[in-house]
Length: 351
Image (tube, rainbow, N blue to C red; front, side, top):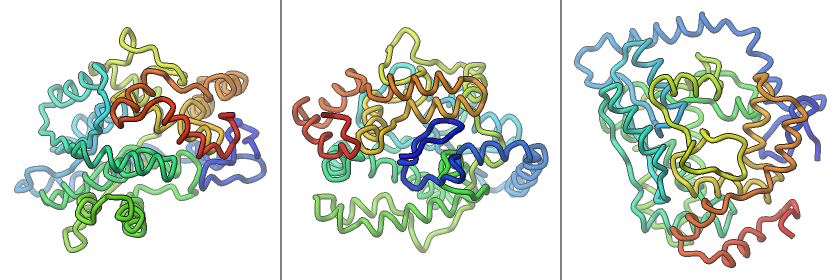
């Protein structure tokens, strides 16, 4: 294994690029200094003017939102700064939702007086697909995370909305791509292709063709333009949190003192989602805490010593409340869970 000389991140992340001992995430972050961000925002404003020019369109953009801090930044830019008329879409899971998460989504919708569709994968399908993915791939929310990308696209097709706006380009921000681009159609197309390639896997494990098709866009439907906001706005969890808190966002203070994390405001909408994030630890030797810590270091909010300590002390920890919610929702005992988790212990950390 190799660790990045700048942020200490491992080279075990699938697809991550290393050059000269430095991960691509650090290299991409350093490139921000050469970007003319004002010029990019002017480009975004010009694009928005084009879509606003048709008064007959009820919604001139669509935004997938969870109600998290990044959702607030998306809506702030597109509504406050750009004057767009968006439709919001949320794809939910069957886990227990936090009070903070419920408040944040409702507050976002009500504050901006926006229309919102909530897409809930039926519990039976959610349970079957999540269990199959956990047991057979070690990636519990594989099916759900596909849907988070494709369902908003499907809504855009159905409502003839010409523009879809996602938050960060995760491939670029986390170092598995050198391509700095606003074009998110490529990412959606790649996921659609992947779902099609994996269809035999899903159908051989009890997910029907119709259920797979339910998260696939219409190949003959309209093709909305899909963009990443992180191309136009330097993406920062800390900055996005400040924007969100100024507009009524709640973190988990007083509700849930989570373990296995170094903050209380990332991915806070549903409890057991943390288990999905933690499963990267036995598979690859890191989990979400390492992701967050390395980003904080790049932004100047943590030292390398602090990051190393988090990777050593925090990454191994799985929050017991999240684990309990995961097991209760899917019908596992703790013994069942650890038996399955150990199947995916490629790093030998669960012995």
